[in-house]
Image (cartoon, each protein chain N blue to C red):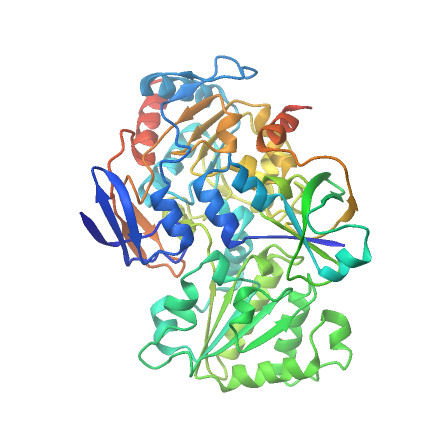
Length: 430
Length: 123
């Protein structure tokens, strides 16, 4: 059986034209996807957790297989006994599970955080500060005649973005010949090689370059020693400004090269402000290149429920937001939380060791279809149906468009949403 | 030198298959340097190097990469994260890019994921 128009649950592109061939509940082939998409579908069962498991003692090496009821009971007990639990992850699962996780956080007085705190948190913080002029990827495809990739490398991180929305794609009023593409990065990435112009910037100098461009647009002189300051020569900046002002429809896509470098949310604040100012000359938009496929979903869902997009604390029974205080990295690095529920992410692999180390000292529950590194140090591991492959749900594309994830094969396990619903019931019982 | 951690296509594919695999280790436990930096030092491509920051040290395999002189690129993952700090200076975001790093040739071996986890457990 061929299932068409399947949405890929890997990156923020949420490509919705994937065809999956299924025989006897097994994925046999995937069409239209990138290398990562095909790997995700075809190998979704590799290294999968086969049963709910727990360790009797934190120091035990081996897990014991248990029933789902026992795993839920143990998880409820850990969360109920914790004074300051952390719930973390959720950027790679469906919106319905994200909503339930926030309900659980409120019920247990937990801090809840998702992955922007280690990728695009600074983008969201800047958006809260100065707003954002955005566009759908459809608008970009059809209209953009100038595309700037700043500190992002979609050819490797969002492999179909360039061909489907922003680079070689042919839209109604634009195509590759009409589209001037610029990459600004510290190294000549594959995306830079496919661009019309590559501007190499010194590491950590994004804020300086943004500020110089903003000042020059307002008529200030570009200093002669600009190349010494940021590695970009004056002619390249002047040409870039002329191209920006001359574009009919420009768009900036920015990535972790901007958000994780020195300056962080000040870089993104400056970039968004630059785009606002460019709108005095022409139409310009700016979009973050969200990596995990449903970061935007949690931003929307938690925004509706609590008013805040990530790093939310419920210890006073009402939501408080402060990324510097309540991000998973900070709470773990400061050794503040006394239990952690990890859903659809792997902090032992993805957070700095200084933060991950605390997880080896406290009770940890991992809900994940695969045996992650965090699962290895957990007290309880609960397998789930993989969202977008074994469970349906809603996800938001990087430009804020909601799409429906499909279930293409059946799983013997519950979805993240169903597991969280059972946990909520269990906590209410206790 | 400055340390830059970044996503790569191979890292993304290996991560989606299994993080407890030799493939994932081969891809993520690699340090990419400019060929001039490799030539200037006593290191050769394929040899093991130790990268040291204020937060820790990690052994990775030296590889030629498209990167400027003075920079070391390690794909995002458990190996890079050994030498990234947990302080976010009030932003919530760790410094994944642009921190000072020193590199040297080493005879020590690359840790596998189970050894990384064992080290996490050591206080």
